[in-house]
Length: 534
Image 1 (cartoon, rainbow, N blue to C red):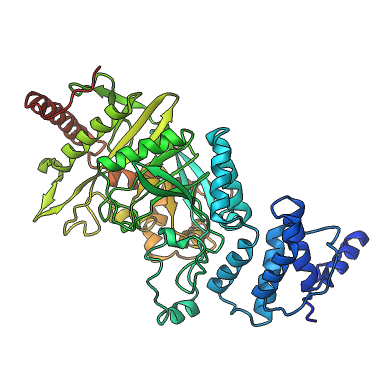
Image 2: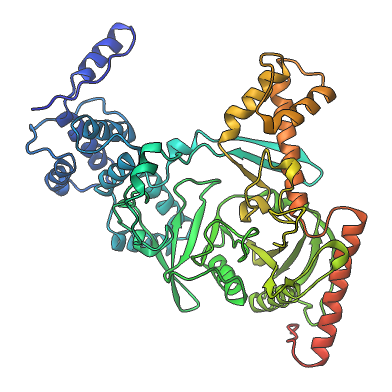
């Protein structure tokens, strides 16, 4: 029998030493026994399945036999036991010591503790019959317990808030997603597989995974109908906010942010009224990272945009039961609210179509150039009691020689902090900043208090400017750098706004609103635009 010896800790009190001595001699057989016993005692696994699951676990670890053992009195947390099972597989050569190999085996082991998709769906809808929150609570807890949601990795993220005139923005330096190991990158060259077509396809449910695709053996998807189509509902493995979830089409097709999307968003809210749901815009630069698969994101989180104040309201003829207003926000946002779902959809569709064809050269907005469309909308929906609330964030993805990354995209002066696309989550006021900043910003702090002679070249001018403008000490350097990063994220949002937060930009926004009303009058008179008032 192979023994899996654990490292001893430093000197501790006698009882602790005795316990650790006992643990240090725990064999892999004991660890396997404790792992399954945890789930049996917690009611996640039926006692009748113990022998079957032990045999399946032995197969994953390539063990031919196991000594019958009783569970330990003091059992570690299941994810700590999972780590030891995977470490054993590395030590005995079952898998290579690569992040992707560990990820795949972790998912396979946790799949043993996870009900089949049919059972998960049955339990979800049984809980739903009690109340919608009970259903999502069940599924969310399951997705954390079976390590599909990477709770330990998510805790590594650096998070804080930053006060502005638009409310408190949320800042996150994303440290949860593991970076690719150079060995994996080299091996992946000869490991190209076209199944599943993307990481959002239904075919990911239960998929083993490999060097270039995460382990999904423990992945489960709730099936739901949206406008007579089958869609899926799942959580994000590396969540950026509370109960971060994804709604995905069962068909692998491109994003389509039109009237069908609006209907789907409000239908999701009818089913899950305690969640928000939104869609990235459907064009490159202003869209999300996966435009190849029709999907939305949602969750249980109140974003800064939701708290933003109304700047002024306006009227669209024939929509007396839909309130429309412009929101005070760094980007350009029109908010609709009302209880009539169909009226909300038709009003939003009218605004979106009008924006799609709108140009104002005075502020650099062109709806198309050489046949390429540039205007798009990021729609975000939520419930406020019986009312639906829908934010339409106006976007434009045009580029120019001066701004090759995008005219309405983070401009060069802020790209040392954030160069990536501004998608749905950032639009709502939550910055997702790259992991490189953890070390780079520490170097900036060290430079500002004289511990280092310089910073990374991309941050040097910014750091010198901070040095000139603040009286920096060891005690305040952290707050000053955090605040400066928050100010940059605010500027990022302003850069992405199509109508700037200055006199010229706001006058242009008012021209669009006036043009919207004029177009409505014309279309109403032509009989092409429905009146929704009852």
